[in-house]
Amino acid sequence: MLYQAQKAGKLTVIGLYAKVRHPQYIGFVLISAIIFDIIVLGAFLIVKAQTDIMVIYAGAIGMAFIFIGEYLFLRPHRFS
Image (cartoon, rainbow, N blue to C red; front, side, top):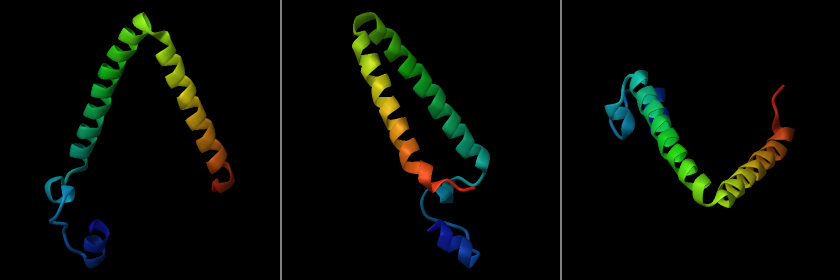
């Protein structure tokens, strides 16, 4: 919808872009979400490190597999 409205030279009046016009609003929401994630995940890591460290190891290994898989998948598609 945003692409069609921009192509036609009109304002989007449906969805999120109808309410949020200034880029700072989107940045504020993004930064707030990141801060809340850090707080909640930090608390989770502290609690889990005290009770069950294997959960943290399993999560770290899973994330490593995901990053390696993305690297191997995107490697042939790099733009020079």
